[in-house]
Image (cartoon, rainbow, N blue to C red):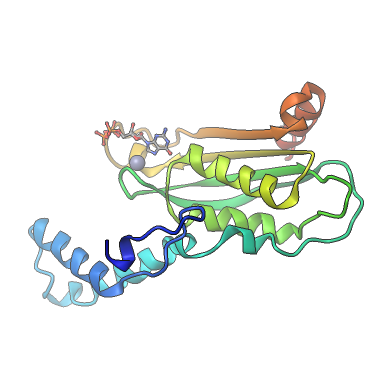
Length: 204
Ligand SMILES: Nc1nc2c(ncn2[C@@H]2O[C@H](COP(=O)(O)OP(=O)(O)OP(=O)(O)O)[C@@H](O)[C@H]2O)c(=O)[nH]1
Ligand SMILES: [Zn+2]
């Protein structure tokens, strides 16, 4: 394996982005499409596309546990819910974007493990910025929260439109996919789960 193919044992984190290799691949793709990568408008395209992928897949190179490393000593023991976090990802099947919003709720354990609200949005960004499927994105966010905050419960809901279903293939623009991942007492207690879902549904 080359260094770029290595996957660390921890949560799929990869060590580096290989800019040269990505540029060569984009140039090849343009050639395969019958384009001339040396014509005026395309000369800088391989480098631009490579940089764009580095940015869109930046979550491959970051440890999610670092995002949640700092916690606050707050004794809050009821639901904390952040809704409508904008989310942009790329489906790993077609490398086309899927985008929408994420809603994240958790019930702290009352022993001081409360995270900063922005960290929930950072966690969405980190996992979204990888080649993904929506189901895995949703459960990875939930599982990172379980791992680091040891909360009483977690709920993650992601609503997204997949461009691979809009601009190609079945071509159904506007269709939305909703996925959820529910852990702990938000899974075991129907009342707690219903309260969280009601707050997510009634947010506007
Ligand atoms: N479950 C799931 N499926 C996804 C996601 N993103 C894309 N897909 C689906 O992945 C599937 C890939 O199906 P394939 O039959 O291998 O590929 P394809 O011939 O391009 O499929 P079509 O999109 O139906 O044209 C498609 O049904 C996509 O809609 C995702 O996040 N989750
Ligand atoms: Zn797709």
